[in-house]
Image 1 (tube, helix red, strand yellow):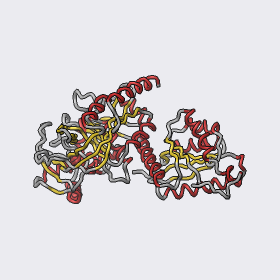
Image 2: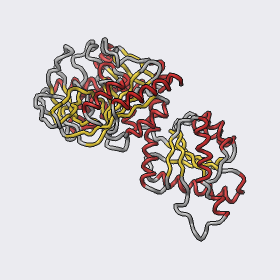
Image 3: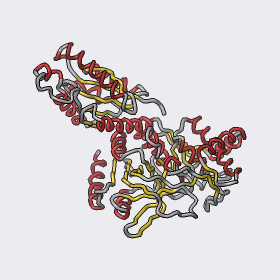
Image 4: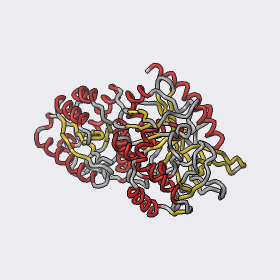
Length: 487
């Protein structure tokens, strides 16, 4: 992952004299240095902005600097907001308004008019907040003392959402063939998605992949087999089948890297010239950070890669997922998530096993795949859908559990969870909102971060929580539909 940074832009004005401005600059540099030591990405102090020209210039530079993933602004003193208009209007990077102050406490003995003139963040941040609201600019407002752990954690989470936006803007998706025939939710307007999210979604023939597969050397396969042995347990003696998956993985990775693609999709309905549907191959590529979508679902493949980037530095646990079946025993309601083969081993509770079993569909040889149970913990599932004219991101809070059944005859990776607010109400809400059967499940990324990301990308966000009811959601969706059509 590219090493991104964030720019710290501090607002002031000439009214207070050079001594105050020197103090503001020194404090801003100190804050940036100390925050950089605890935040997931560096915070670089850029300027104490005092004029329209300075602000416009730094915003312009941020737009064109690929290493800058966003700006964080703070007004140490009063910073007249009219001089921010031009810069903020042109700003194309995510913006966080950090409402803080240098000192934690009001110093009873020291406070005088000089102190008040210097420490006007409570004053300045309100002026700064007004212009953000007046311009209707997407922004994140975080208030609190800059040395508090929770405040720093919130900034860090916002930074990761902003990195997700940066990754989105340069996202390239490689589709091996088209999507599964007659499936609606895997369709979508690729032109609108590129204009809105930055994704370049194109197709490559499966025959081109087979050609690259045939050129893979045995020594390359030997090396990848050693990597498999280091990461996974072998529960099969069918080494040729595993080696074929290695051949598929090496070929797909070569094509992805050659085109600069971070995500890919395929479908079992288009396997021309291939002996197996990629299972282990797709799973191990996801473990390296690539996004994947089954049945040609390019939207979920890109979202998987974006959540993996946003979760960097966590436990890496974001994965392509599909709701498969329910356990509807009263008091024990659970969803079982899985897929035919392709669930990322980052969500595994224990060391995955490589197994070979029949697939049952697709008409190809038995493929090798990783089999494991998912880890316990709070998580989210997200789905990006095309509503026709706009995109909607649906996010649901879930709690993953150790599967309550061993399921010895189900040779796939599986995750079991309890959905909020309950299984049945959650299903009704998900279906009401139009959520897809394919999702990204993440233990690392939070619903707040997904809301921030949606805000940065200027798309609709729907959150299903423990407090959501079908009635309240229907009402919210109705109003949202009107608002987005007006917009």
